[in-house]
Length: 184
Image (cartoon, rainbow, N blue to C red; front, side):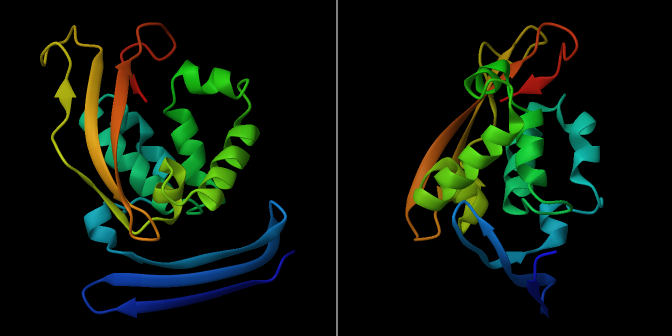
């Protein structure tokens, strides 16, 4: 329904640079996406639908932060807001309670935060220049089957070049239906 201009250029070294500008107004202003350089092999984006990987990732806490950052960097692939929907799937009840279990409110809030504050988590994840894990995953209490909390330290670079550090806290779910799965 809305006009969309999409330019796609393939660069040497398997780097795909894409620019897209939509005439669809989001949150009272025109939405434009900047260019993003993606090396598909490095990002592990072989499957067409990232959501199909959730079952493989949720039991491996060391994979969750990179998986979510890749999903958020490509938020509108394969569908609009896919990355934010996957982030919602990996969230604990704490985040869901803040938004009264309403994913639409969560998505609107994440976009608004990203647009207003480039150094916020969602600003860096959705529109930033990059991210990297600074340390391996730390299992609080040791790497045992009884461990139910883990942390990951990440550095992000915002669209304006400012650097921030984030500590991810992951928790193993103890109750059904997600017993044993890790969530953020």
